[in-house]
Image (tube, rainbow, N blue to C red):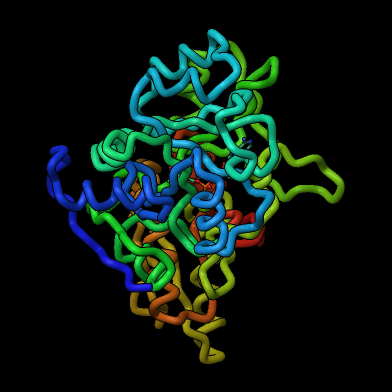
Length: 352
Ligand code: TXA
Ligand code: MG
């Protein structure tokens, strides 16, 4: 299959790229499209055969459910059994935006979307192209991140092409994703809401609206064997570049010392080392034979989030043997950053 990439500059209804994408969605084909979080790989959520194609194109385990994207408030009710008052408050506060809300699903949603679960994750994205595609196709769109399963999520159309070339007919290019990490996933089907995946809508922001939010233990820790999984996506290796990743956690200066020592050790045995550095510490590693990528200041975890996946993919392009990464504080957007980093590292952490 030939994969076409078309830049979308405007979202007028007569935009030929959008018309083509909407037609493909209605015909049961896949289209990759930009959202404010990461690029999505979309299919008509009401067409089970179209949804199955997503799992094939990504190599995604069949028991990992998909998020359904909508564009209008009226789209919510037909897709769910009920909308609890607290969920309504969250929608008012954070939609359109990077928050996925898990509710009990209606019979409209095929089992293929939810991997047989009785719940569905709904999200109203903020990106104009994502919204225009949902509107133009007239269908809710099921879409996971548009990467091959296990790889870092794509934040540019180029990343999508790298993973999906020959697997899907069309990629809409809307530039770099602003948030750069996937949406916050919040389970609203329990008495107390459970944060399953931190994202651009932070725990602190949720706590301003909700009385109480429980953070699922799997957000920062590996699942213990036999532990029940609330979000099937947590079971799988994620965001992994080709090279092994080690995260240094703790005091910033001690991280820099620990990483520098490791850089010198690896370089002395001929290894190509990548360092994922903060702005504050990057100078410590420069000129020591490592490839240093700076992702932003510790004071701006949202910026680090926006650059993280792209940096991991750059290390892949440069074929480094090992990646040493500075950890950041697990608050505000830093919680989402660390949730992705510890998974990219397969929970290989060094506390300094
Ligand atoms: O920002 C995003 O959410 C992006 C863009 C494209 O919207 N999408 C995305 O989808 O990240 P995906 O499939 O890569 O991640 C969805 C996560 C998975 O970990 C999945 O297990 C979880 O959400 N999830 C989806 N539906 C669920 C449900 N009903 N119950 C529990 N977890 C669910
Ligand atoms: Mg994903």
